[in-house]
Length: 261
Image (cartoon, rainbow, N blue to C red):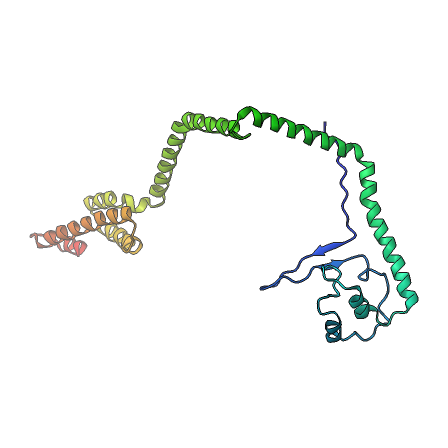
């Protein structure tokens, strides 16, 4: 059965790491109060000169998140105008906050000691089982048997579904070909349509269809389209020859010659 798992998260401080293009900037610390001493900086109207701080503490920093933090730098930079009594009050506030943060994890561990012991027992059992498996396999790794099983399963699946997947690929190819034929059925049906219209004497329809096909596929680079369009050109050339012969054939009526022209 599922059991609730207690998780303790220290949310008193949140660190955001900011990066620039060439170098990483120092972490920014966000607390409930920006000042860890809990003192207002209203009395510090003027900032302490930065260059003087760097001369006094060349290897230090006033950023409490950095390893080279110097408390004197921080106090001069943020509280050089704060009274001694206020600083003592801030120290007491900082100690209380520190004690609260220390008591949080301890109380969490005490309240969930049985859970930690269960986790320890589980990890110990897993370690013992893995050690036993390693000693029994010799030079083979713990996952060697699993790898062999997965490889066998993969081979069996390939053998089982090879024909099915092959037929699926063939069906997909056929479906795609039918889709192309349906989409461009005008071009693929045009040679037969031209032959039929020429026999019926619908010369205007033949010319109209040819003009449309030329505008759509005259400059195509697709192999199958070029092949079909070449058949259209061959029929148009034969159509021209037939019209020339009809014009030269006498006797013929004026109406027939107008229709041919």
